Figure 1 (cartoon, rainbow, N blue to C red):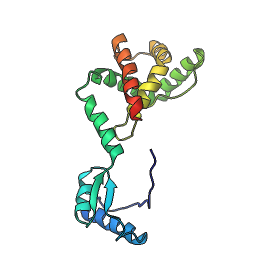
Figure 2: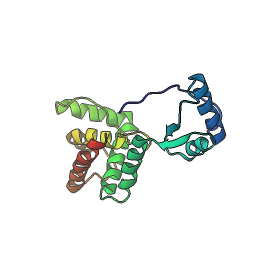
Figure 3: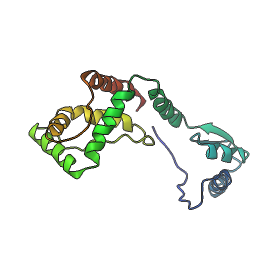
Figure 4: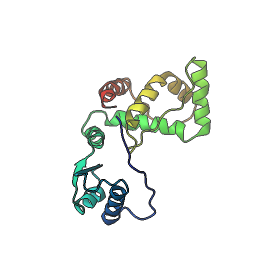
Length: 176
């Protein structure tokens, strides 16, 4: 995907529709494109849609945002939920503890694997579910070995859930 930004604005005020409208118009004036522009594309957040309605411009939802949203919404009705919940908890175990992360690194070294941290899934970060699943899957042996050396209450993914995570990686890759 490619993106072109006319400007990046830091704002201290709340993102109410009126304030966003003023920022859109200010950018259009600055670039002298007020009369040359017909449509503004944004995510589909209510404040953005409302801001555009306050102008003479038409609104177009960002296709990339819509694709990302459709991917995240589809998880709710999928058979991947339990596997993803367990994966997130395993990753969190290593992300939130330097000691646990060090143990994972030690296991990566002993297995001759690249030393790399696990990646946490973050709902607002595009492709983070895919990146989490890929990194966790590629480090499965090291993760299991590290957890075998620790006292924890984690419930690891079952063999069937590890397979589901692999299938999910295959499904999500084209959406990258």
